[in-house]
Length: 320
Length: 145
Image (cartoon, rainbow over all chains, first blue to last red; front, side, top):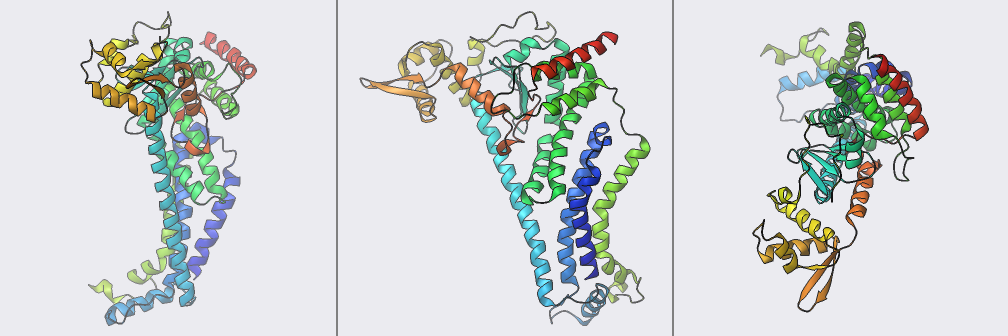
């Protein structure tokens, strides 16, 4: 029961408290890829912890069927003892049910998001093909439109779309930057990263950590692509391209009012890009690893202890 | 039709704006819809299947039934309207090419919860004032580079 309690406490603290800690993390903009990994690790950690908490609750009331050999039974007794005071059969069942629900809910949401994304992309691609002018096959296409815009359709049948207005207003090096940015999204499979982030947030909507992870990952993914484009061209080129393609008219009714995000990206590119130093990277990586491994160690500690003889009794199975 | 490439196209980049003939050479069936829509958009009035077929004929040998199926599909997708003219139908686009493109772009660039990850955007609109402030700062830096 103690394991379950500890896990539950950790999950709650991480889910609600971490966002406040990581809220204005300036370091994340310096090393966006690492930051994405950390957010993914934290999300996975919290989900794994809740599942393991439920399983741990059941472990303290572990019962094996009568057909199991005496040896196995002894093992089970030892393990059960190490999980602490039993919470009773109904609590165990509840724990397992809870764990199963969490997993099912997540898998269901991920599947829905994936299917909807694939359908949406196919739908849009089909409509696009009626007006798109292909350039070098259909990997890059141009659509006649008076507003400068550029976006990509990721996935298996990927495509980079430029409007004619964007083509007119971009200088050649800026065009290279735009294409490099979009290719970075496609090649980096960022759409899958985004699906994962969105799935956690929509599967468990009231969890602050997942909401923040979703927002941050969306922002960081753009920074990653910006960095790739900046490596190929130059930081100021990408910034200029952003301004040319992103500015001009006031936002139309349907467009998101996210001027702040573009502004932040431009300002970030205008400053010299200093990635996180080795110590910082190490610390972040350690934190991510700890978040992923910690819950499993905590949950499986009693079993590990029993199997290795840490608690004085050795499970007979280890003799074989 | 299309747009002016203009002096902005770098020779090295060589964006070949594909003319109708080159577009006709793409093989997938879906592109046939694009070719047919292109004809109908370019034509001032409604066209019958036979008229479209005749326009396509020199460059693309197609069967009447193929073109008829394509135009029927486009009608079912609400891209074409049709009216009977004797024994055949005459088809006309339901919206102009510009309206269609505009609607498509709006859909692509609107960030809604419904399809956030479907298309990853390079562009998010910022206001002209903010843009000019940033642009001035950026130009200052670029000159110094």
